[in-house]
Structure formats: structure tokens, C-alpha cells
Image 1: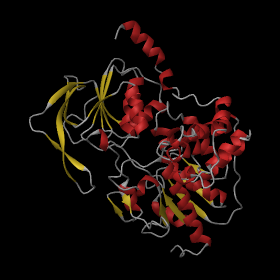
Image 2: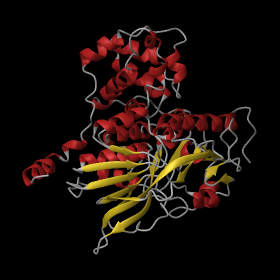
Image 3: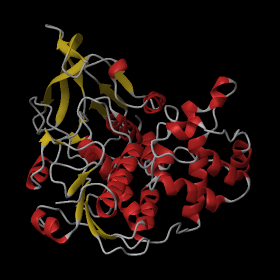
Image 4: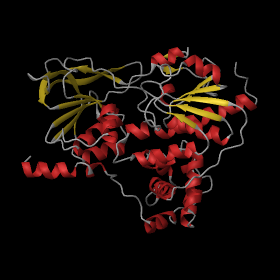
Length: 456
């Protein structure tokens, strides 16, 4: 890369993180909404994990009632503005659209974004708090599941407090999804919608450290554990402590919270893993000016957990994919910086306990790639210590629950989101976490005022 090109690239780095999709214009939204057949028993509703009344919100766009459309969306999905951008709609609502049989499906995700973007631009507050019922609920974690639970409980009249370890609430939507797909202001608006229901959010508050588990269990009538997951685990190979080895979660977070850096200009980057976070790490690297970005995955494209649209997006960005390839050692230079990675070719063997064929190294197939940075994206660890402070039964950090009530082994504690999402199932969807948060809120309400057995 020439010096002049480097200067041009550096000047454009910040712009590279602007949102990729500009959204629908007013005319496009009206034309698209008028294509909808407004089906009776619409399959798109069934396909949406949060059950948004899709024909109704689309019809309201067609009639010019944009606020009503946004309210219909957000009533069912408290993080509906974020989900409009990050949901795999082609696998969910759009995949179920009856127009797939004849022309092309309605652009449901884009129409959802159109309505919620209007509400954001016009600073709309869509809901009012319910009449107080005298009950208190603590929510540990202010990500998609926690916010959704808080929103429902606020509407039901509960006194709700969210305890969030980070500086801002929003979890994955605020920190973990790249800005060019989901800008922070979208997540912040959803947080404000929750706060408008008199929900208290205590940020920079780590449960188990800044406030004890016993204090929460004592002072609240019920608790919802919505803590998500933690950092990327170790690769278990030599060289992970070298300068230039990154945790993908921290890497993406830094692009959303700190000034954009030119440290990747002209560099060669490899990303280990093939989930959505790995795709984010790779596409961020491209936008930071990396000359070449490769994703290394020890299985094949068929086993990849990233969404199809994320995969296609990465390919369009010029990201290379090396299938059946595993890292063996990260090699450093005299200054302790990454200079290469030793890899080994794999083949798929017999299925493991999770039903997936296990990758097996091919003896003698080692090779070396010269690289300047390595980004680890092989899943996430869990907050096992905090789970055990609550005294909850779990399986490797996956909290055991009653799947009907979302109650844990402590009947006072409910759980939702990634903390109950089992291993070997790919990556949980943001929209599923939102629905689980709602379900946890409804379960608490049944326990407090309905026929479900009382909390003891």
C-alpha cells in the first residue's frame, strides 16, 4: 500500500464505521408496505420469536401512522429497533412470507427499521409505566434479555432495578455488534424507553463485587439473572500472550467506545472462529485498513455458526475463508509482537456428543502464515463464579431452569438469555433473548399474582 493510499485510507477509517445500509426512503417504505397482503393468520408473525404483529405495523406505515407502527413493533419486541438491523430475517419472518412463492418477500426488517428510526429521530416515548403493585424485582444484566424483562415488568407496575457492570446498559447491542450494523444510539434509545417506565439502571455495578448476592436476594421479591456471557476463552496454544493477539469481544467493543485507530493499516490479520463475532472481527479489521484478512475455521462452511447474510457480507468485504484449518502456534518476533501463525489442516471425523463431526488434525500438514495480528473468536466463557454465588444448579455455566417458568433451582431467581442457552447450539439470537426476557417477566407476574406456586 503506497503512502498516499495510506493517508487516504487513514482519513476514511472513521467513515468506514458508518452504517452500511442507509435504510428505506419515505417513498420506498410506502411502496413496499403496499405490497403486503396483510395475511390472516400471517406466517410471518409465527416465525417471529417475539410475535410482532407484522401485517398491522406494515399497514400503519402504509396509512401514514408511523408512530403507531413503531409502537406495535416495540410492544412485542422491546429491542425492536436493534432487531430490525441484526435479526436473520431471511430465516425468520421474511423466510415465512407467502410472497416467497411468487415474487420476493416483503422487506419486513427494513420496514421495521423505517418505523423505529422515525421514532428515534422524533424522540418518541412509546409507553407509560403501569400502576405500582408494591413488588420489587432485581435484574442482573442490562443486555437484550434484561432490558426486555425490565420493560414488561415496568408496564406491569413493578419497582425494577437493573444492575449493569458496564458503563452503559444495552449489553451486546451496545458493545458487541459492529457500529456499521448497529450504531450505539439505537441501543441507547431502547434503554431510554425502558427508563421511561421508571426502571432504575445502576451501571458500573458488578453484582458479587460492588453489591453482594445476599443483599440482592434479601432486598428484592424476585431476581432475574440475565448476565449473558463473558470473554473469549484461551486457544490453548503457544504465543497467545504476544502483542497483537486480541479477544474479539474486546476488539469490537473498542471500535464502538474509543477513537478509531490506524494500527491495522496495511496489516495482515487472521481471525480464529466462524461465528457472528468472528465475522464482526474480520469486517472490523477490513474497515481499520487491514491489507488482508483471513478467517480460519477447523470445520467446514456447513458447520459455521455465523448467519448466512453475515458470511456473504464478509465475502463482499474481501475476507478470505480457510476451512478445515486450525491454529497450532502463534509466532512472535524479537520485540514480542505477532509475526506468523503456524496452522494445521484438519479433516472431519466421527460425531461427538453434540452430534457435530469432530475435526481431526492431519499429520504432517502444518504450514505457516505470515500475519501481524490474531483475533480470537472461538465462543465465550461464562460467569460461572457469579452463578455459584447465587447457589444455582448449572452445567458448565448453563443455568438449569424449569423451561415452563424460567425458574432456577432457587425459586426466587429466574434466568433468561445466553445464561440458559446450552452449548453446541450455535449462537443465540438477540430476538430470542428478548422473548425470554418477556417470558421471565410474565412468569414472575404469575408467581406474584397468579396460579403458579409462590416463591419461597
